[in-house]
Structures are given as structure tokens and as C-alpha cells.
Length: 444
Ligand SMILES: C[C@H](NC(=O)[C@@H](N)CCCCN)C(=O)O
Picture: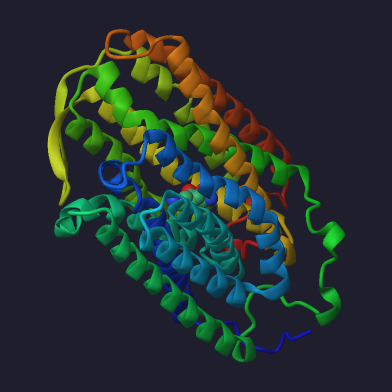
């Protein structure tokens, strides 16, 4: 066992965080770069909405197929090789998506992106857990997530800052390909830093050479892990699909314009960019991770019914610097702002919590399994909500037709609250997740 090496300096750890976050920025940018060219894809290659839907699903199907193997690869071959390989796959996917107008080629590009991008998220989370556990893990994860979400937001904003490219569908995707190149560069820099650290510093928990974990034990986890996974599934199965339907919902059910609806909806990632690291910093200081997750779930619980049944209230002036401004109904603003706060709080606490309850050697597998379960919920819920909206004839003439979908989201949020409570209940002891925070060294 190597225990005599010093711990890395804070500067070194933040350099690692920066490289990994830049790789994630590119990852999120490439994923979201397709949505602003949807209308151009419909005009020139002439794709249908059904085909666009397939481009979206191809990513999730690929992720479902590859995640467990991806987690194994990370734990078996290490994060240096994993991050670099997955970033290269994302770059290959970006190229494949842009080189041809043939639907099958673009579909293959999005499928390949699912193979690289989701395991890249898992590998990045594993790196942060290794380098920051017991220090400022939630804060570091929050910074990483903010930079990732900035990638998503930048893809949306590229319609403004790169507007000359939007004369055809390919040029914006070439920009995305260049940004995927930045991801690969950041991954290689991370490799160099990690390699250098191996001979100089003790990073993470010391491991004996013969401590390699057996494949059959790789996916055996405690009940607390499964409570976190269950919360993850219902949380993302609520927030991601709600976000997909939000702009249309605001237009149809609340009679606001597309521009205002878009601005309102963008409040969610914008709030997350700002608040996620702050919540991370807070939870690192005070611990009580399970309690924070329960509070987040509780805040989320009434939001979908509030947006359905509360009066719209007076208009307030919403201004997002560099993006735009509009008058928005107070109730919608309050609901989206609170949802944005929950979208910052729960991820900032939930993902790092796994690092405190799972053995470091199995973290890649643990994150991969959690992400796989997340994909399932995220894939199924939009189908259910879409079917409910169709069944109850939701639309501008019948806004109450959206209510069953909103009740469904509320049911999911209640289920999330239940799992957060179960987690809190099982982690209350002196060695539980509740008592771990940075000042204590944060180790289990
Ligand atoms: C950290 C978490 N990541 C995920 O949920 C990923 N599986 C999905 C990434 C989506 C890429 N646009 C998050 O983003 O909250």
C-alpha cells in the first residue's frame, strides 16, 4: 500500500476539476446542439418530427446498452483511459452527425453520442469523487455541473452568438464538433495531470494492489444506495420531461408567447448554473445530505399543482442578462424559480452522496448503474405524459386537459419524497450520511 505520499495541493485538485469540467462542457454542448437546428433539419433534409424523435431516443437507447459496460471499464481501466476514450467517442459522434444529410448517418451519430456521452458523465463524476471526497465534494460537483449546464445553455444561446451559422443545419453542428475537440483536449490534459499525480500524491483512499474487486461483487450495493437510485429515477423522470413539455405547456395552457415561454423555461438551467455550486458549498459545510434531498423533494411536491390550479397573479418583469426580458405571470415565475432551485439542490447533493456510501473501487459501476436506471425513467415518463395529454385532449381550448399529467408529476415527486425519507431514516446514525461533512473529513 502507498501511504507515504503527500496529498495533492488544492490548486492541483482544482486544475483536475477544470479539465474534467471542460470535457463535460463539450459533452453537454454537443448533446444540446441538435435542438436549435430542428427546424432547419425539417426544411432541408426534410425530416419529420417522428425522425427527430428517433434522433433523440437513439441517444438514450445507446446509453442504456452501454452504461454497465462503461462503469466496468472505468473501474477496471481507470478514469484516465475512460475519460479520454469517451471524449474521443463524442468527437467521432459529432463528426458522424454532421458529415452527411442521410438520416441513417445522423441517427448513427446520435447513437454513438449516447455510447460516449453518458459514460463520460459517469467517469467525470468518478474522478471528482476520487479527488474531492472528504474535502469539498459537493461544491466541486456543483462547479462541474454548472460548467456542464453552461454547455447546454451555450448551445441554446448559439442561435444568437453564432447566428450567421444558422443558414443551414450543418454549420452549427461543425461548431459543436470543434467544441467536442475541446473536450478531447481537456481529457488529454486531465490524463497528463492524473499521470503526474500517480507518482507524487496520494489521491483518494489508498488501495492495495490485490484489492481489485471481483466482477460478481461489482453491482452489489446497500439499501441506502438503492434509495438514492430510486430518488434519482423519479427526480429526473419528473424534471427532464417537464422541461421538454414546458414551453409548449406555457403557450397552450397559460396563453403566453413562445419567446416569453422560452425565457421562462431557460430560468431553470440559468438558476441551476448559479445555485448548484452554492448548495454544494453549503452541504459540504453542514452535512445532512439526506435531509437536503428530502427538503428538495418536499419543495417540488406542490409545484405542478400550483402551476395548474393557482391564479396566474400579476405580471412581473423578468430580465436574464444577455438573453432577454419579458413580463411573466408571478405564479409561473415562482414555480419555475423554485423548480430551478430544486434542480440545483438535489443533483448537487445526490450524486456526491453515492461517493460516501459506496466503496471507491466500485464507484464507476455505482454511478453507471444509477445513470442506467435514470435513463429508463427519463425515457418512459414523456410517453406517459404525452399519452395523458392526448387522452384528456389537452390544448389551448382545453387547458384543464394538462391536469392529469401534472398529477402524474406530483405522484412522482411524492414517491421521491418517500425515498428521500427512507434514506434519511437509514442514514441518521453517527456513521451515516447525515453526519458526514467536510470538517469531519467526510469519510465513511
Ligand atoms: C449530473 C446529471 N447528469 C445526468 O443526469 C446525465 N445522465 C445526463 C446528462 C444530460 C446531457 N445533456 C445532471 O445533469 O443533473
